[in-house]
Length: 84
Figure 1 (cartoon, rainbow, N blue to C red):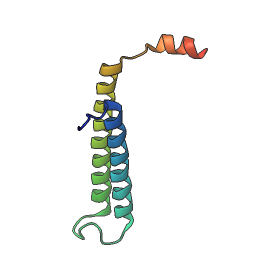
Figure 2: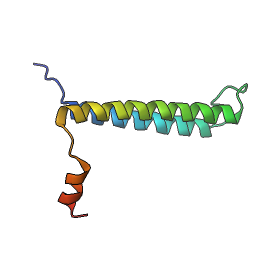
Figure 3: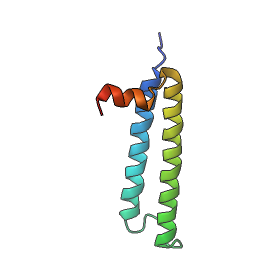
């Protein structure tokens, strides 16, 4: 029978996948001819920055989902627990 993966497993998988996408985009950027010749380097950098922004937004949304599921510890309580 098929079992539903835990939310944390999905978040971990998504995180690994997004990191692989990030690394591919960076390595692709470093390969001459990977991007169309009509684009300038500044346009390429802007596209990579936009991609990273989208990935960060997705990561933040996943973190919010996990927080809603597991709850959060207030920063004051965490500081006290860590003795900071």
